[in-house]
Amino acid sequence: MLPGFDHTYARLGPAFSTPQAPDPVSEPKLLLWNQSLADALGWSGDPQSDSEQLAALAGNMPLPDSHPIATVYAGHQFGQYNPQLGDGRATLLGEWLTPAGTRFDIQLKGAGPTAYSRGGDGRSPIGPVIREYLVSEAMHTLGVPTTRALAAVATGEPVVRNQIEPGAILTRVASSHLRVGTVQFFAMTRGGDDVAALVNYVVDRHFGAAAEAGDQPAAVTLLEGVCEHFARLVAHWQVLGFVHGVLNTDNALLCGQTIDYGPCAFMDHFDPKACFSSIDRQGRYAWPNQPGIMHWNLAVLAECLLPLINEDAEAAQQVAQEIVDRYPARFHAHHQRWLAAKLGLDAVTEADGALIQSFHELLATEGLDLTLAFRWLAEMANDSLDHTPLPDLFTAPPALLNWADDWQTRRKANKGDPSAITAALYSANPTIIPRNHLVQKAIDLTESGDLAWVKSLVDRGQRPFEWQAGDVEWARSPEPEERVTRTFCGT
Ligand code: AMP
Ligand code: MG
Image (cartoon, rainbow, N blue to C red; front, side, top):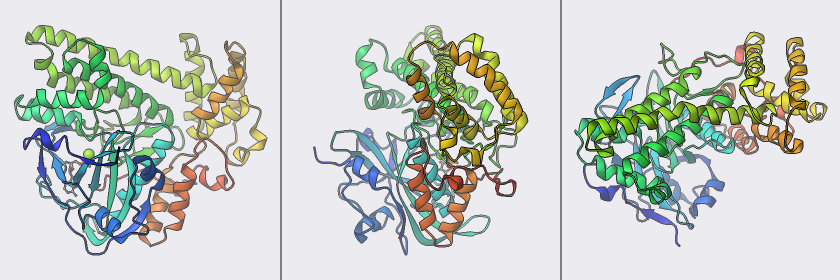
């Protein structure tokens, strides 16, 4: 099959989207290009050598068969319903079909105003584009479902925020950009019009196998599928110390990928209340609240689907409630599975609760680096500490050494293949995460025109579970003066 664009979502009709060509920019310049993603997509263009391709990724020239649109959605932002949002600064070039027939949305983010810009300029500064590129690609290599970054292009035009900043456009790739907020727009703002068409579309696109396997309304298939996606996704965020920062319903994708790398951040030292976003004053989206907030987002979706679940309101309510109520157990199961892998245990049971809790308490009271502390366990279990740069990066305090005695005792009770359990320790505990101070340095250098360092950061991020030369720099915790404790969404 030849790769190329398709437009099934646009064909749903004018209620769902508005045709929207990107707004040309004066002086496009390539910042970053993701050749391995291009290869995976079967994307033959290369903006490094082809100026027309660069022009297309800057929004200056249409790509063959692309019919760009902006899509409409709504959403609860910090708990308040906003009846109409939409792609205010993104245009969907189309759905790209890979040679294997897999469908991906390809968007230009920051490509100028749309029908949904609500007075905004439709643009993005370089900083948030570089942040999204780095962090989304890191999430991918860490194994977390996520939207991805194909290219970052500077526009050559200024963007006015608190100060004047250089503008940029990100080419974003997602399984789709359909959100809880998309369903909300039709169910709540439009009073139910077209919500059935949307739900059928989403189920067909993302939950086809489940729909075929069961004989139930599409809305039930959707709710069950999203319940599982959210539970799995948040469990993974939690164990990596990832704080999304703005988990509004419009930033919760139905396909289960992480989206919107605005004020997000990874923890360095373990902080059980971690919250980085400058606009999240109440800590609504703080690290400990993420599992609960995604449960809330799921409940919002459920409410939108009620009329499609059963004509009888009470029966519909009961079915929806049962599915929503399954989320905590599903989250817990995924979370326990991750903790078992990260701690080198065959399984985590109730009896391990105290051991795990005391580990986290110790991380918090000793102010230990979350990523390095877990990796220390992996190297300890494999007796490999001295063959790594870790002794230069992390010193286990006496309290941790004491705790490790209990942990090793518990590990002796492991059943199952010990080499598989210790191997899992390596694949669950990264050496490298996109630390805030690295992302900030990458942004500063990119803005000053130096791309070499950010490219080496991207390259190093490709193999986050191994040690490499130079890791004393890439893997270390920030010095106190380097710590980034506040992040900004850059809209
Ligand atoms: P976000 O905080 O990125 O999830 O954005 C929330 C909403 O604001 C979405 O509908 C965006 O499309 C819109 N938005 C964010 N920044 C801009 C901008 N600079 N111009 C127009 N719309 C924007
Ligand atoms: Mg968003």
